[in-house]
Image (cartoon, rainbow, N blue to C red; front, side):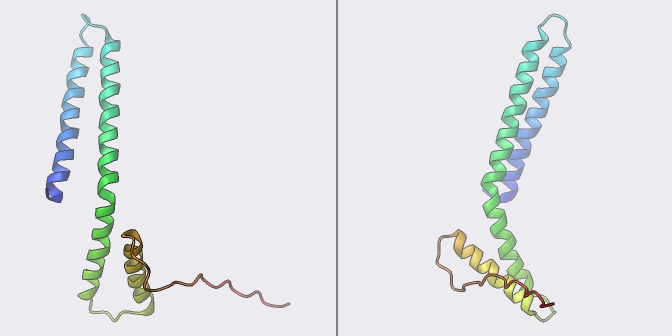
Length: 121
C-alpha cells in the first residue's frame, strides 16, 4: 500500500469517527435517553481514535525519517553550491545514523567535541 493510501485510510478513520461523534451529539440532545450513555460512548470513541492516530504515527515515523535522509542525499546531488565541511560532516552523520539504526557497524568514528580551553589569568 502506497504512502498516500495509508494517509487516506487514517483520514477515513478520523472522518468516520467525526460522523459518529456528530450522530452521538444528536442522540444526546434527545430527552428520551440518558445522556451519560452517550457521553461514555463519546469518550470511548475519542479514546480509540487517539490510540489509532498515535499508533499510526509511531509506525510510520521510522519510514518517514528514512525518507527525509534519503531525499536529503538526493537533493544535495543537485545543488549547485559546493559542499563545505559542515555539509560533508552532516552527510556522513546521516549515513552513520542510518547504519546504526539498521544494526550495521560504523564506518566512521566520531570524536566527542573538544572542550574549549580556559584562558589563564
